[in-house]
Length: 187
Image (cartoon, rainbow, N blue to C red):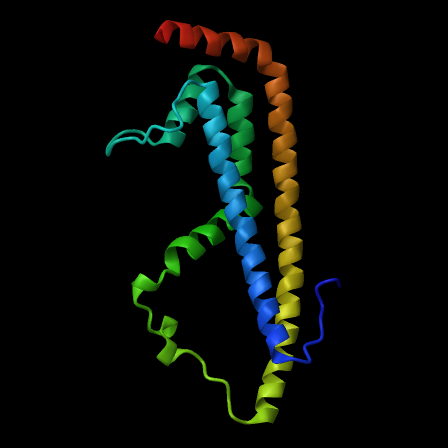
C-alpha cells in the first residue's frame, strides 16, 4: 500500500502520525465546510441572507433555508440535502470534525493533555524498538482504514455534487425568475 513505510528513524514514525492525523482532520473539516457552503448557496436561492446571524430564540440559518425550500416547493433539493446529511459517511466525518474542534480543547482541563501526565518513552532501548514496531503496524492499519473511509465519504460528496448540479440545471428557469421577483419586491 502506498502509505506503508519502514521507520528506521523514530522521527519518521512521529512525522507519519502527524501527517495522518492532519490529513484526516483536514478532510473532515472540509466536509463540514462543504455543508455550510451548500446551505449558504441554498440560502441565496430561497432569499435567506447567509451573513445574518439569528438572535437567540430565532430559527437557525439552516432551519430558515429548509423552510424556504419547502415554501418554494423544491422537494428535490430538500431530499438530496437530507439524504446527504443523513449519509453514514457524512455523519461520521461531521462527528469527527466536531469532536476534534470542540471536545479536545485544552480548556477542558483533562489531565492527560498536560505535559506532566503524558506518556514517557521507556529508557530501555529494546522496549522502545518493540513499541515503535507495534505503533508502526497499528498506524499503517489505521491509515489504510482511513483511506477507505475517506474514499467512501468522497464518493458520497461526488454523488451529492452531481445530483445538486443536475437539480439546479432542471430548475434554473424557475429559480431564476423567482429569485428575481423576490428581489424586486424587496426594493
